[in-house]
Image (cartoon, rainbow, N blue to C red; front, side, top):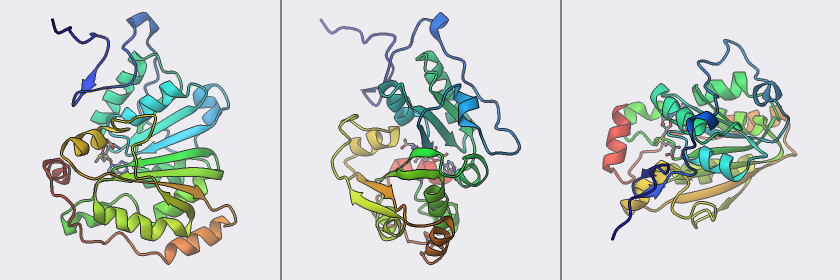
Length: 257
Ligand SMILES: C[S@@+](CC[C@H](N)C(=O)[O-])C[C@H]1O[C@@H](n2cnc3c(N)ncnc32)[C@H](O)[C@@H]1O
């Protein structure tokens, strides 16, 4: 007889969301109504301890951050997204799993990096499936720009890690063209061992539609000063690529947003 899935496990496209929903008396309370008007943030004050910090830009429903926070309880996680609704969901999921090492906040990535994340304070920055915006009139909204790359470089600690992933071949070409200027960059074509079915919601949905996933790891080039990195970034192309990538239903929905 088929068994009912456990009611304390949530599924998304048939893949369990990391962790279990705990009894309500074990929930965390980590909601951030809004970030202060001015940064920088004080990680120690936010998390009540001093541990490495992992940032997730454009976190969507937070699947990567939840999985990483559960697997790495000694590391603190701060995830941001433009959309309040996804941050509400992600915060609730983190709280229901009793996670105290996670915060989710509504913020644009460039503002977050330039005004809130202290320089050289973050061990890892993750960027999963930034929207490609197929409509050329929206190309200016693309998250990854030379200015953002320079900010990511400045925000990472020495030797810090920048992890990128996309299912859009044109965005991938842009990443491979620009990232090596500021990072020691390598492809990581295989699924991440910690999440063989997909680290993020978009990865799981894209794989279900047969799309190829492009993954890469960039280690911060430490020899570059902030000024050098900014100057180098300024010489890089803007993300004006013409997106010919798979125009799937997922992208159509996101392009409308
Ligand atoms: C395709 S979804 C990917 C979500 C998640 N990373 C994943 O892989 O499932 C892109 C996300 O980036 C967010 N986003 C787009 N532009 C952003 C920006 N400038 N700053 C922060 N988040 C942004 C969108 O709201 C959306 O949730």
